[in-house]
Amino acid sequence: MAWYNILMKSYIVGNWKMNFAVGESSVYLHKLTERIRASRDLEIVVAPSAIALQPLSLQIDRKKLRLAAQTANPHDFGAYTGEVSFAQLRGLVDYCIIGHSERRQLFHESDKQVRLAVAAALRNNITPILCIGETSTERTFGETSDVVRDQLLGGLSEVSAEDINKVIIAYEPIWAISSTTDAHIATPDEVAEIVTFIRRTLTDTYSSSIAEAIPILYGGSVKPTNAGAYLTVPGVNGLLIGGASLIADQFIDIIDTAKKVIS
Ligand code: 13P
Image 1 (cartoon, helix red, strand yellow):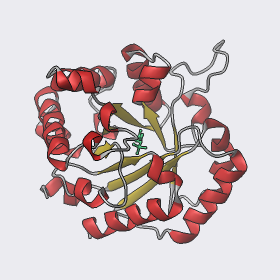
Image 2 (image 1 turned 30 degrees about the vertical axis):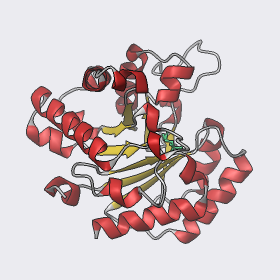
Image 3 (image 1 turned 60 degrees about the horizontal axis):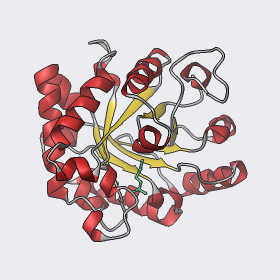
Image 4 (image 1 turned 180 degrees about the horizontal axis):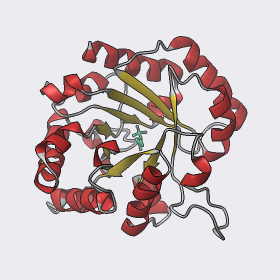
């Protein structure tokens, strides 16, 4: 394990996507809170649907868990029907997932929207979790590093020098998300290669001290059975989990694995 894996805080982030009614979210959060022990070295974050954020922000025990939004609009206020802004989320959440591949692909979120969202999150005291990752076609055509570099530097392009170390990066290869077969799961070596590339790109663009201080998470079909392998990839500081975060036993199992890896 590289030294920065050890010194840096680790993150386990559960992206609930569009699952759970508000009441179910509350019951699930209660269950997690009962079973999780606070740890200074491990930040556990859950990202419920927007509608559940306000009630859960009143319920959450921030010593054990933190809340993330799954997306938000970069404008602070205005005529944007159906949207929720970072300014409205200020104080409710500590994190926001930005540029998730489902937002980019299904809702046509542009690179411009992603970079404005990263800046808006920081402006509103919310830590952006900037998601980047290639499709299977891009990987097949050898375009992974170009895509990852463009999404990374594009997403960070509005961030000032003093804010750059407030950002978290999540590498989520799109072909490895919600996979049902092992053929579509990234190997730890594949993750290591791209995470090294991300840090090298951050070093070349900013500095090695900045590159080493930015947490990089991995996401894509993380399960209790493979979490340990991803968490021990040099340069990986945590996990962004979809499906397995919806099942308390699996999510807690992954948290326990993370605690073992960092201790
Ligand atoms: P899965 O863990 O279900 O593959 O989802 C990953 C993801 O998209 C997390 O943001």
